[in-house]
Length: 366
Image (cartoon, rainbow, N blue to C red; front, side, top):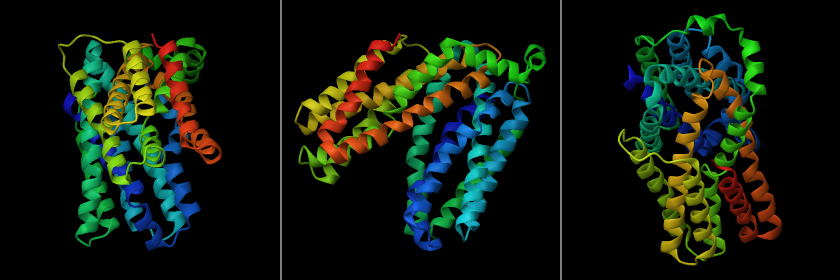
C-alpha cells in the first residue's frame, strides 16, 4: 500500500511535463496564439489554488475514493487533451486535469501521513526521488512520441493510460478512512482554525520562499551565465543541470531511514552559499557546484517543510496543506519581478533578488 502512495510523484511529474514540453507542437497543430498557449500553461498549476477546498475534503471523506476518482479524472483529462481540436476543448481538459490531479495528490498525502506516521520524512523523500525519475521519464515519453512521428497526441494518450492505470491501483488499496474525530469536526470550522494558526501561515511563507527557487532559478541562472558570464547556451544549460543532480543526490540521502536528522537552517545556509557562488565566482566549475548546492538545498527544504506542515495539526493534514500551499503561491511572483528587473537593469541586478530571498530564508529558518 505504501508503495502505491509513494508512486504519486512519479505519475504526476511524468504527465505534468507533457503540456509544457509539447507547447509549440500543440500551438502549431491547433492554431493557438502564444497568448492562448501561455494562458493554458498558467492555468494548469494555477487551477490548484481554486481547488483549495479539496484539501479540506481530504480530511473528511474516503481517501481511497478521492484518490481513485482524482487519478481516473486526471487520466480522462489527458485523453480529452489528446482529442482536442480547439482552444476551449484544451481549456476544459486543463481544468479537469488540474482539479482531478489536485484531488489525487491531496488524498494520497493525507493517507500517507496516516499510514507511515513518524516516518513521514523518509517517505516523502522516497516519493520525491520517484518524482525526479518522473521528471526524466516525462521528456523521454514526449521525445519518443515526436521522434517516431506519432506526434504530441500519442504522448498524451500514453500519459492518460498511465494515469488511468494508477487510478485503478489507488482504487484497489485499503487506504485508512477518516477517524471519528475527523468526521465529527465541521469542515469549514476546521478551515477557520487552520487559517488562524500562525504556525500554518509561517509555513506557507517559507514554502513561498523555497518555491521562488523551484525551476525558475535554474532558468534565470542559464540566462545569467549566458549573458553575463559569456558561456554558450549549451554549456550554461549543462551547468544548470547540476542543480537536478544535486537535488536527486540530496533526495536519495534524505530517503535513508538511518541518517542524521537535518533542520531547515543548514538547508538555508547551503542555499545561500550556492547562490553566492553562482553570482560571485566567475568560473564554470564554481557555477556548477553552486547550482548543485541550490538544487540539494531546495529539495531537502521541500521535504522538511512538507513533513512539518502535514504533521503540524493532527487530523487536519489536508486542510493544513491546502492553506500552506495557497499562501505559498506568493512565490510564483518571483520570476515576474526578476524578469521586470532584468528588462530594465540587466541580469546581474535581477539575480540579486534571489540573493535577497536566500538571505531572508537563512535568517527566518528554524
